Length: 485
Image (cartoon, rainbow, N blue to C red; front, side, top):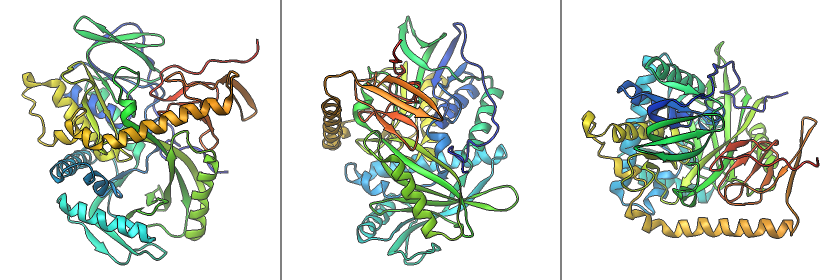
């Protein structure tokens, strides 16, 4: 029987206490993934009293459910980016990712985190995929990357061609996160798990960060929660939440490189070294907008079926899913939640490429928060990560499309359920639950995700466990229990 958890999370792990009392810090970072921990580490190293608050456990979100690629070749992202951004901004994005990749490589070397240097490929097996891959080659070269076109690959099936970029990295996601958490604590940082933030309240010159059981006050707050929680900043209207699926298998064939297809149905392929000298085969793909697929178990089954029919002698060991955010500009949003605000910051929109974007975001956030007093010069590439920019106008059509979809999902949910109060009934491992089927964020009607065993909102991607507990924001409150008394 295979494990229904990320291969990275299937191990003993350290635990950290929940927030208690009413402490005060220079900075509170909300979110215990890669972005949050790295931001906390950089600030703690600079002498700032810093706490990281995680609603569940370190790595529970995107960072612990990734494929662990640290690559500047990112599928077809650069060509998509060029459709609504000038080449100079795309070059800034690549420069930021290069800096993030280099920082992560240095940290891994200094802290004994194993990293494998591998070539990255964007490959195509269909005509549409080939057109996309060739566009990506052009975009990569425009951005200054030494990418090449290959007519053959190591893959055990025919391809129409592939973009290749040498000297990229892959790693074990939780090995890295555990090392960053340990380094953060060694620098005097404070890490709390099971401390879900439910509100932010301005208090004098600071902000009070409220959890269910306690609160902390800070001069600056960073929301590093995949999608920024709460309503007031409106980032949920500029993002599209997407889920994708992954599996680990034992196979007689594993790749040397890291591969991602540009075809309409994307497939990710890489290897994972394991103790004893063997390797696992990691595959991913078959994604969809969160809450908008009626057959999520079919998505996962199709991915596993593709792997078993494509690669020899496979034995399934793990399956899992992940969630990330695509911005309407295709660029990350990193910086003040509101123009000119020096107390609340966000980091989001990494579009499945957090292991290069997160270090860059952490570097930018730390320098922004430390400010001129610490002689922290902001990086020249920062405009590619701006939270608010006139370039948003060029991609406003995408935002209108995103929000038209949201409106259709909101209306459709109530039409399907009629006038009765929607109840979310589930039975998992013999335990039944009846909770409200209405998302507390903006009232979307939830859909059951059989593959992830969660209730997912089709509006902005909030997710809930069968018992109603929050798994992913922007919602911060769980679902009400509606069992008959």
